[in-house]
Image 1 (cartoon, rainbow, N blue to C red):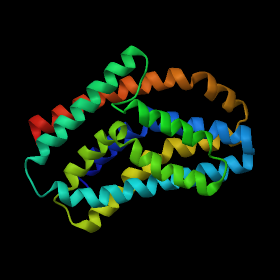
Image 2: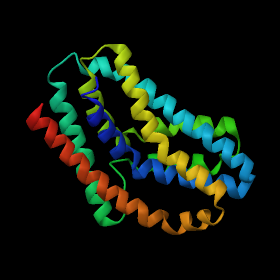
Image 3: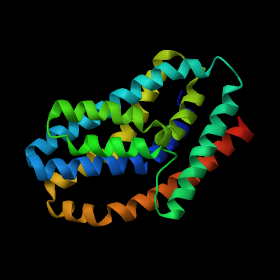
Amino acid sequence: VYRLLPIIISCALVDSINPCTFAVFTALLLIVLNVAGERRAIISGFAFIFAVFLVYLLIGLNLVKAIGIYYEVKYIICFTVLIIGIFTLINSIKGSGGGPMPKFVKTEVAKMIEKVASVPLAFSSGVIISISLLPCTAGPYLIALFYMKEIPLFYSIFLLIIYNTIFILPLIIILISVVIFKKFTIKLKEYRGKAFKIFSFLEGFLLIILALYILFTS
């Protein structure tokens, strides 16, 4: 299990800079701050983050053993991750950023965020958005699950908790920073678009490297 930790942590770090999740969460946070105030933003932000953590943990638990059934799954994962990485890289160069997510999904997600002003809605949005953004965020997670496929379930749960804790950590840092440093909110608005493109390019590049690594070494 411990020999897998560097791989799991590396994938989680790549996933943690995912531009799709960053963009959605910062938009939600800024809207709730403007509409409902600081206290509601904190509670709604943590509700959203917890929903993301829970959904990704459950998805991982359901997929980790299924991935180990067929050897061919390795090539499906590599192909999927390569496609996501290439799309993300191309989109970042074009300036749009993000992975291969359909436009209608982006539109519906944007509409949902605009209506979030309560904890139940923030949690529900976290659940729905986590599933909706899977085409954009699944790459590193699939690679991590591929490496977990043959270990006992108990250890898989342990590694999944580590992975998803790292995945949500930047969201927690953003939330705390906005609350403690009020000026950070203004900076967040200014740099959100620029950071989105940078993270998008970085993630696309790393996904391609990870996919090729699995294809030629595993």
